[in-house]
Image 1 (tube, helix red, strand yellow):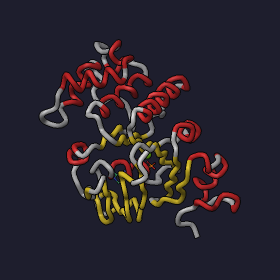
Image 2 (spheres, protein in one colour):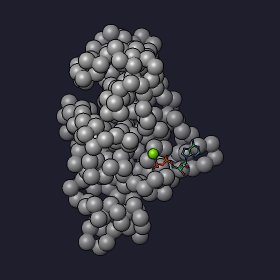
Image 3 (cartoon, protein in one colour):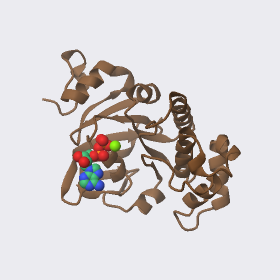
Image 4 (cartoon, rainbow, N blue to C red):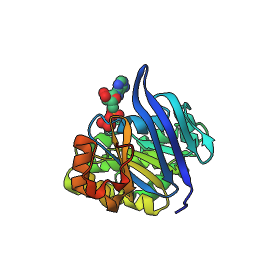
Length: 251
Ligand SMILES: Nc1ncnc2c1ncn2[C@@H]1O[C@H](COP(=O)(O)OP(=O)(O)O)[C@@H](O)[C@H]1O
Ligand SMILES: [Mg+2]
């Protein structure tokens, strides 16, 4: 893993129209790193991922991606620069087959190699190949989540932004999805994962970043934050003295 951050976010302020949700967010993600972005409901986690895909209003601050300034750019520019986004929720096209969904995902940039990208998706997720003629909406929740991930990774993004992939899934499906995320990470992808299932997220990720009220309040190796710490951070924005060394912006 490179030591230089591939993604360097500095003093980012972003939101919707006149509403600032992210307030002065600074965060580095290194190439090949797996970062879990945690925090209570409404903290701004989804807003941060959307901002890293050009889907919110950028107000101030910098999103530097491998030396290139991305703040305020459009989704297709983030896509072209190597960002992949897996939004929260299920398949975009439930009445289309798996094959057709992958084809649709491939059309998002003109000049895409539809056959090659679909093959890449099937190589990464062989289970989807066995279901290729099934309507996406008829598949299990876990399989649909894999399809969502496949629709993002077929463009071979360097960084994958994944929003709450475990929501609504059975424990078995959650394990399946997390195993696939770990495999994608082992294959060299950089991953920024938003997750409410902190236990699973902390098992998979190398680093834990906690967002609360639009601010980063914690940033440490995943092994250095306990579930008790996370509970306290979510509820109060603070941790007890014993592990307060990594607190960010807490006075
Ligand atoms: N499209 C939107 N327009 C206006 N406010 C929004 C929109 N989406 C989310 N918000 C607000 O932004 C805040 C953060 O939401 P969100 O980023 O979804 O939080 P999280 O993902 O951490 O639960 C919330 O107060 C939410 O109501
Ligand atoms: Mg969210």
